[in-house]
Image (cartoon, rainbow, N blue to C red; front, side, top):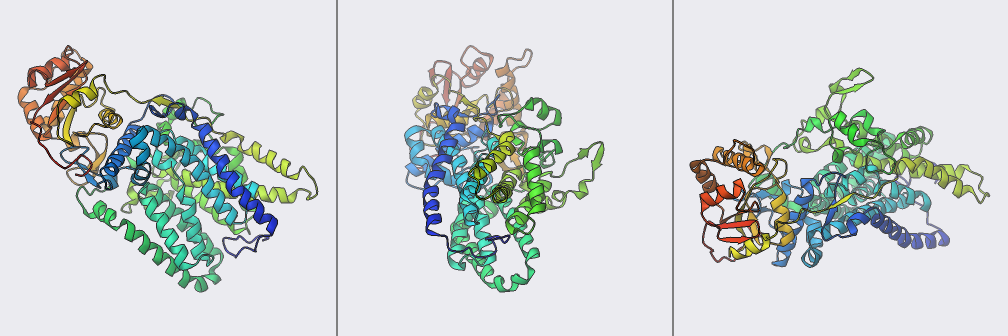
Length: 614
């Protein structure tokens, strides 16, 4: 092949011996990645029925959100249909649009049998392992197609599938950790652009991949599209004379891909952008989500060799589960040197340039100070891109997830170049190259994902929900909504883990505010004044703050009328300030078990509709 990438020129027909090695490797390597995935996830797999990832100190609400969505999808499948894209099973009575939330629709449907048999956390444990092994395998396959040696492809796949970014994502963001499809999407796009893929077959394949990614994580799809544009831009600028000959075939393939994806996704996209609960913008302060320069060389807790990382993120105002940029000095240096030394290799040129460009984008749109010098925000490309609709919801600090894949491509090429530079007849040639690779990769060696048990439902929860004799999908208001104003997902987790066939008033989700801008559920932006006041006073009661009482009867009456619950449930017991207040307001509980009290507000009404069909 010399210095010309197979991403541009057709590969020569492999020899029989090479073909045999490939067939052996295509079975052994994925199995090895699968075993490695189980090793780094062993704390979760030790008891997957109740254990989920954590950042090492707390369980983030995003975990419970995904537990709820896995149960939601499984319940829909159990009733013989796909999950509804608009549902009031959460945030009743207003509901949510699943396309604007990290609902993991495709994994939820595929793993529905597991969820129904073993519970949602078991499905999520499987998803984590597949995320590691599948991401590594997908890049391995792409690198082999790009003519990397088996050893180099194994290293490249491992660097991507078990990169610090994906290890950090595994602590909280299932939809980002499952980064299996982006390498395949990029490869299919390049095959169309270079004429190595047949327009019809490759176009359909690309369309299927894009459609699948839509129902896994649209944010990662947007990031992948940016990466593909970068790779194609480098290719076009590097080989402009070849553009006219390839343009017609590439355009035809992309058109076929677009039609294929739209046929599958058109209904979901119409519901997302033109249906009920359409929203704009992001509920997050996007400018706070960007890479700090020190992030590139400060090891996070997700790698084995790390320092006092928690102190670092506190000092820089970041979140432990949102710092994806670390690769360390050795890898950054190797990528830079390889890009310069192997500039004529199109694989290295495309991946290397895209890597640094993507990391530059990842800095985002926030103040950056380097050595006392303030970097002008107008020099940051994301400052301008963030004005684009839809892209203004993308969190730039997450670009390193795919940037690590680009770095892995460069590292694989560097491994092959180093091996080729050593004396060909020396038996230690491969071992020496592997030892050099191990030294470079040592700083990013992953540590097992921290895990913790999910919050158990209050003793008596299932009994009270059953004794209330509610209709399927009946809305239930669980009080307090939160005891400390930072977690609105507890009731979601109880409902999902117990498979209670109810809807929930409020919750932890993203919805449009009064002006259509994205906001969080159960916040002042989504509630009436009476509802917000009632929640605030009820939380004060739950926290047993002296001198602070419950809401007035008039305020509570208006709030309950706006929520329209069929029942109210609390796990606070009857002897606490909150329990006494609720008994004084609603009267004696309709059902009681342990510390859990339940009041049926409306009589049970038979209906054929369930929480997952509305």
